[in-house]
Amino acid sequence: MNEFWWYAIDPLDVLLFRESKPFVPGEGSWAKGIFPPLPSTVFHALRSLLNYRGTKEQRLNRNLEFYGPFLLDAEETLWLPTPKDLIAVCLKSSVEEGEEGDHFSGKTNNWKSTTRLQPHSEDQGWQHILYDDNSLPPMVPPKLNDKEFICGRPHSWIKATALSAYLKGKPPTNKCDFHEEPWGVQVLPHIQMKSGERQVKDEEGYFTEVAIRLKPGWRLVAGISEKLNSPNVVRLGGEGHHVMVDLLDKNYQFSQQWQELKEHETRKESSKFAYLLTPGLGLIEEEGKPLRYGVYPSYWNGCLAGCVSDRALLWGGVSQIRRKLSVGGQETGDPEFALLPQRAFVPPGTVYLFKFNSLPASDARLLPSEGGSWLETFRKLHYGMLLWGN
Image (cartoon, rainbow, N blue to C red; front, side, top):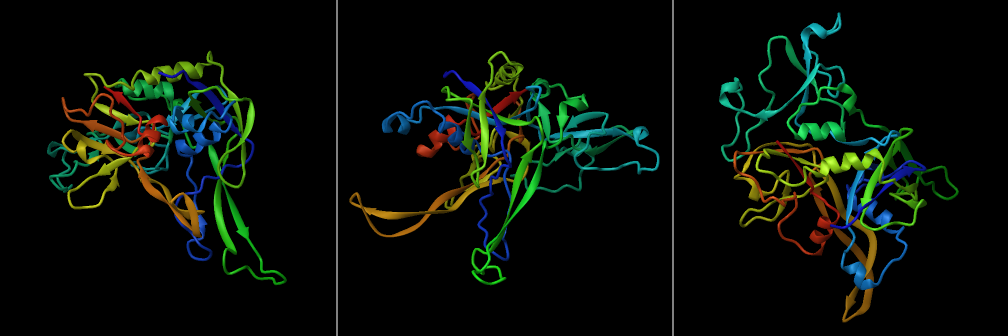
């Protein structure tokens, strides 16, 4: 196992990580962003700070490993996506006067306890739910007493220590263990006028992007298997925005939090569910049909009891890079568009519940079982990393 160095990544400006959806002036000219960015984006930025680049052969060997990015606050507390199967429970007697009794408020921090969604069963009184016998049963709330009701979900981010307790089977009970998204959005309109006229150009004349501004004290954090030339400034994301990269002391409490999480990377006999720490890929393979991406791979069909996820993270697509065709080692013809494979990544925080005595391989990740050099790269960057829970 390679030794890892962890680095705090402190934005010096807004950060822009544009989604992969193509957009043009006029209809569809609004480009949203993805945050936190995918691992490959941050990895390539940090790699530019290597003290030496190495030979071409060393670069092709993909000998660097990477973890992240995650969130770090001003107190060096590690924050990760809240497990998506957690729901918040309120007591009806605790509802403030003048409010309705069963008030659902989406993301909330006004709760008394948390509980987990569970696979639907007929004895729960959910007979109106219909689903295909070959698909997973819906994940539904457990039966609550007369004084309890579901008031929403906890905030989007959870402390690493609380996540470790959750993986040990202890539902989070402290509201301070959750935090709302520690960033705001900033809309960046781009307008290009016609020369000598007061009109916007028809082509590439107007489009809008959405950037991220982290709140004071909040940073990204990531680990890489080689020491970097830091502290230093590097470009990260679009529009040439910069971040300060600084090495974290190995005695920081961050290291203790990370090591506690790493204990759950290996599946145990008592493991019953898995939490997705980093974006993964689930391939659905059906005979006679093209490959497509799903929330879990098709070879998990026999062992899954249920899962809770969210919309996929789309990345890839049409690149603006133009490349010349190469014939016999000689470039020829006019440049053409280069196409990047678009993939639908399963978002971190997704939870998989497995049947009794039916688990994937102990070293399983949420990645395809076969692939080319891109798959080896994803493994080195620890895409699809699962943490196992009891």
